[in-house]
Length: 199
Image 1 (cartoon, rainbow, N blue to C red):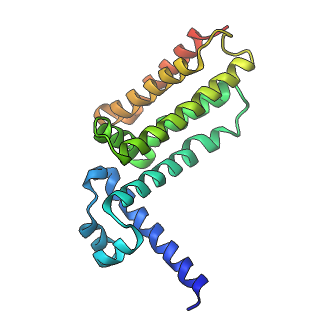
Image 2 (spheres, helix red, strand yellow):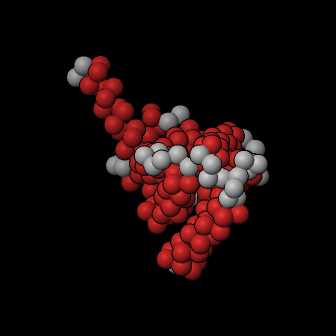
Image 3 (cartoon, rainbow, N blue to C red):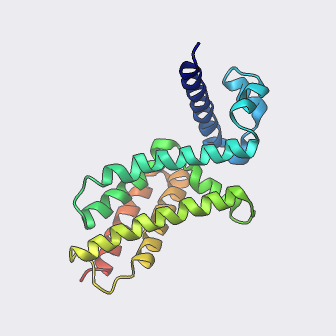
């Protein structure tokens, strides 16, 4: 086996471990990740898993990165095909609402609850991810101001905060009261929010 083949196999194994760990974390949270059960789930020894991740924290950080990549691929990338303005903002929120149903929950939101008051690398990583996401939303709001679909005095950061709050309540209610009702109320709230910012 040459070095390139070994490297490719190692990368594929690492991705398989992250994929299985992501599934576990979606249901049990990042704190629910344990090397022993994960190693058993992927058919490896603990030392085999540790060969790819130096520590449990390194594994958790890799899972957070994977969650962020999946989220962007599901929510943001498809919305970028929509015209700048409310169409793009609406597409972002629609996909964001649907994310909870597609994934059976949101690891990023549960991780924020787990680590919001626990200083350390995991919290710092989450804050950085959340900051980038809010900047993306604020940028989409700014583009909608530029198209004239939102009032010129709209504060993009404030509106991003309000849009984020709609996604949070949809995700919250979907688990407790059902997805269909949650998304219906979320859509109505979104259109009301757009009207409140109309020029």
